[in-house]
Image (cartoon, rainbow, N blue to C red; front, side, top):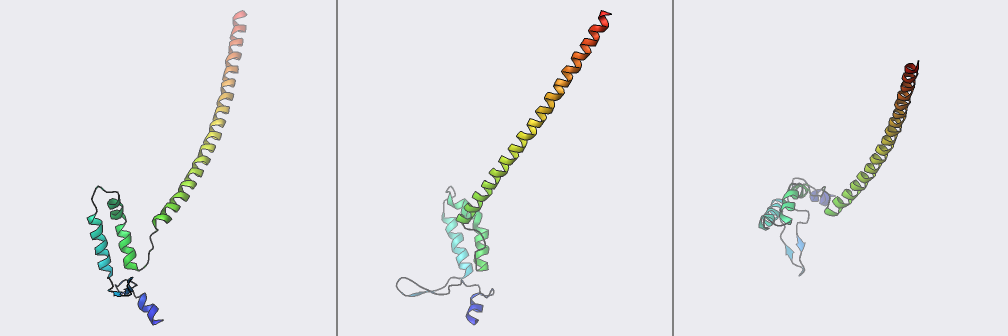
Length: 138
């Protein structure tokens, strides 16, 4: 239990894996969170400004920095983001289809009402013409 408490101690600014063995079985020194963030910032600055990667990394840097400082990744991965975007896009397409269908239904109703009023207006005009003709024949 003490090991678990030590591993998740927010006051401890070291990475969770304090020392790791390399491929030769030798221990490597740990990096502090500040060192990890500095290395990441240094790497991002080393990428040419006109690259595709640099603007994206600069955009996600604040969240990556927060994830490092919090000892766990709360921001979604690229794959998770793509999956969420696909779900959102599918929902948006479905909603758009429903909106278009409702709009078409509403438009049909408006057109039907317009045709009825048109026919009523034509009927009223014909009736007025017939009355006028009768009045002139007298």
